[in-house]
Amino acid sequence: MLHRKLAQYCVEQRPVWVFLKDQQCWLEDATVVDVDADLVTFRYEEEDDEAEERMSWEVCVRLESIGAVSTKLASVSRMAAVEDLATTGDCPEAERLGLP
Image 1 (cartoon, rainbow, N blue to C red):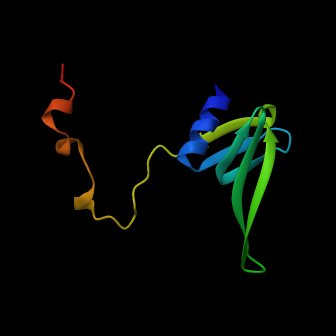
Image 2 (image 1 turned 45 degrees about the horizontal axis):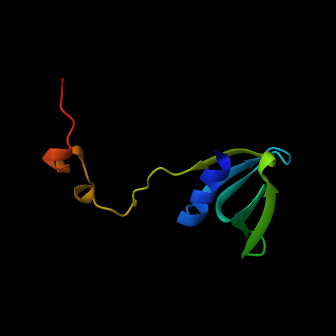
């Protein structure tokens, strides 16, 4: 199931957070580049504060080394006005759930 989910994230180019069991660290805001058998390639960026540079990395990880994968369900721009946010009142009548 993890293999299929990672393949789906690869197609969607959705950012993921991956915990690597063997290294005991997180890859933050990574992109799944490729899923080939039991090898998964991730691309992520790090910022070096001292040199004020941004570095891009690609790592190949065995499926068995992945302890957890998480992704954002949704995001809302902080710049959006409160009036622009969708609420349940904006839902079409046909899609609303009936109250008991």
